[in-house]
Image (cartoon, rainbow, N blue to C red; front, side):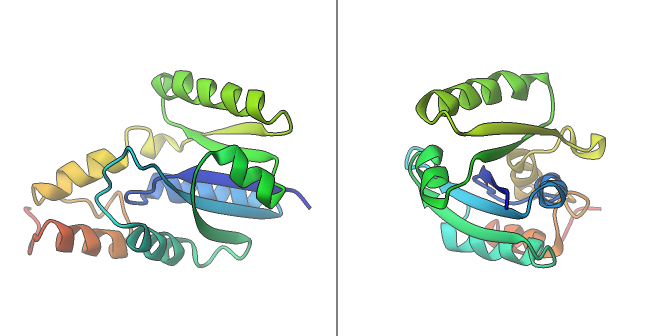
Length: 164
């Protein structure tokens, strides 16, 4: 049985994240989508809110497990006996950062391999930050996030209606 982990902040989860999770779930027997906690980051959503949204968005993929973790990713992979890390790449700019992380993880834990999945071209520009910014101004985001995420963003930013 080959297990993989797809870590991220998922603040919030987007269709780009969902696309990577669906494709990774086809490649591995078990996929752990792990909502990472970084004490240095300021999140829009609490970990419980992010867990709720991610679980709802991925509930139809039977081999996906949603968890949270605070610490080094390699500590998580070691504890769960996972040796594959999934990372999505949108553009060349993502690659430099992701390569550094992959090499650092490999240096700390030699048994961990990173698999890069290219994002679907429809989501190559999409980020959680972009979604939050557009939502904060009342813009349309339904093409980028599932309904539950859109609803939570509107509640968070106290936006009643979309600008058309």
